[in-house]
Image 1 (cartoon, rainbow, N blue to C red):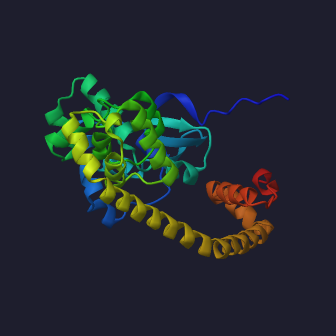
Image 2 (image 1 turned 60 degrees about the horizontal axis):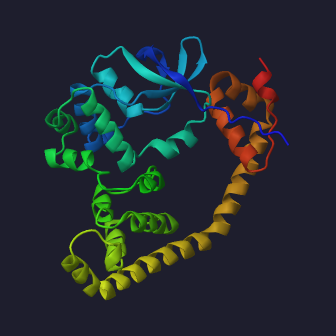
Image 3 (image 1 turned 180 degrees about the vertical axis):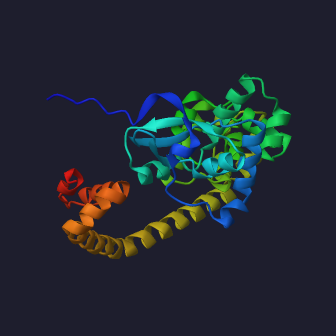
Length: 302
């Protein structure tokens, strides 16, 4: 049986495009502009420039649909910037992409910071640009010091607090791996959970003096209690999901059935094809993933 090659989601080269040919899919609200993230990103773009490229999908000559980076694009426009670095996507499905990239994991932030330092930026300048303390920048710089490579791979795409790595650093490499696997298995990456794992770790699996090990050993009962509490929260969340699963699936099925009938209306399909082809493709992809093979003849009609 032959195995087909996996299609790359993006082109390898970063291109520079005029901002006025990039078409956003949503507006940035006043609430976004007044938020802390918007303020920090504005400071970063002014002091450092655009580090993470915009993600766009080429729909035709001089027509690029923005998939990710709406806030960055808005800020660049307000700064009077005319061109921006862009990553070309081979797929126009923005909703699946954004779901995974909106929040940059701590490890990714660490590597981005190292790249910024490598090109000559100082820690003080980066701290000013991001509107954070110098100590915070140094914590992120040293994030993986004492962390074994296997743990880096396990947690590389997880939304983990930087303080968690400081806790893992107190364990020996094999225990670090076990702790990281516990986090992934439970889907919990909180500081209290990491502290609980540290507290129930055997003294011989800890780094540091024996006195610290004895102190940790004495708190093992409290740590186990904390673990049990975390497990209760997880079970409660799971039960909540189970209770709503049937209703959610029924709602999704009814909604997809309605959309399927809607798109089989020739006038509606032709209108979407001419004016909102990206929305049409998204709806067709959604229906296909839910077992409804909507006719795509409308996309070839003129």
